[in-house]
Image 1 (cartoon, rainbow, N blue to C red):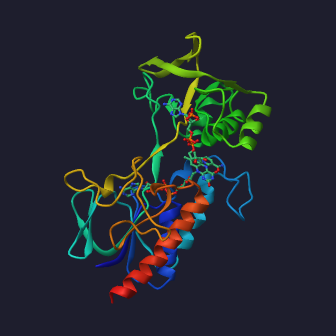
Image 2: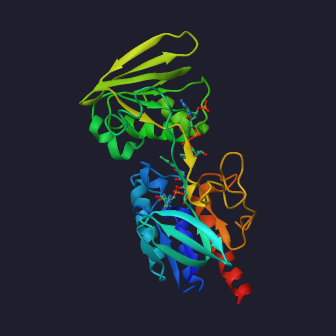
Image 3: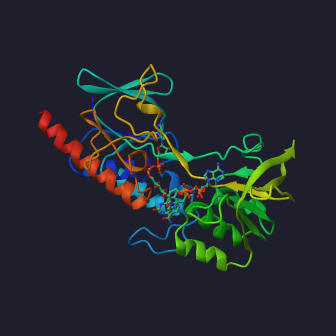
Length: 313
Ligand code: FAD
Ligand code: NAP
């Protein structure tokens, strides 16, 4: 039986693994369905992680050393998707994709969040064929061409800035006339001459054919006027949805207390309503959605796991 199963290998899960193994637990496995690193690996930059001050590095570069450091203390890694986690007879049963099960005394769930779809016509049809949620991954395809960014938050404005250094013009379409992004991020975008803010507007439709996206219709929601734009890539940054599926039982009910927004209710020690089950990072209630806080949560959860196991013995 594992001392601890960690589900999700973003900043929260990796840090939990580091603290659990460095804190003396011998039998800890991190289950991560992709390459460890989490959402921040989709970011073109990171400039608010204390002690890290290199604007030339992407989120992927930034997370590279985390893995090396975390695995150095004996954390095991299985590149597998977790389907569900159930508590039975005082311990946890983790079911992996394919049906294999693993038993663990404790679990820290750090499955984070995924990019949200905006819901306009053609979005799903052209996803991966002109519609993208990753500027670092796909920006280069539009070198010296115009692109459109949808959204008005930090991610949209930061990624618009990144794209403005590759693409000829970046049109930021936002549904309101006030932006959610932090003021310095918005100021920086406004100062860049090839970034154009199109407010009070939404994407009405993404259009194209067998070759992928060919253009978009942008609708001004105050005037109903539609502007068609040809030859543009479309980057959608409209927030994230938390990944809470692993916490559902066979009947689709959550095994622990959740908020109305689908986030897990935890206390300051990352305890959920189920003893021995901890949740860290963007999946938890009131998460600040920052790498530094996800990492902090992971460390707290791991220290609590160590105390919990000591109390059980
Ligand atoms: P995540 O990073 O979401 O990691 C969750 C991991 O769990 C993923 O690797 C996923 O593959 C895995 N997983 C999910 N479900 C399963 C499953 N069933 N089985 C196995 N594995 C699973 N924050 C900042 O502080 N500064 C920034 O500059 C910044 N920029 C950002 C830019 C972008 C484009 C985005 C999207 C986010 C940005 N953030 C930034 C926010 C930051 O990335 C997140 O707050 C942070 O990554 C959350 O960490 P986490 O470990 O909770 O979850
Ligand atoms: P966000 O803050 O939730 O912003 C989402 C944006 O998309 C909002 O402007 C929203 O409009 C818009 N939107 C939502 N649904 C839409 C739809 N269906 N159609 C059109 N527009 C839609 O998401 P985020 O920018 O991804 O940021 C997520 C979290 O990560 C935030 O807490 C953020 O601060 C954090 N983050 C931090 C940094 C950093 O610290 N440097 C960088 C990136 C992200 P409204 O404004 O009208 O709601």
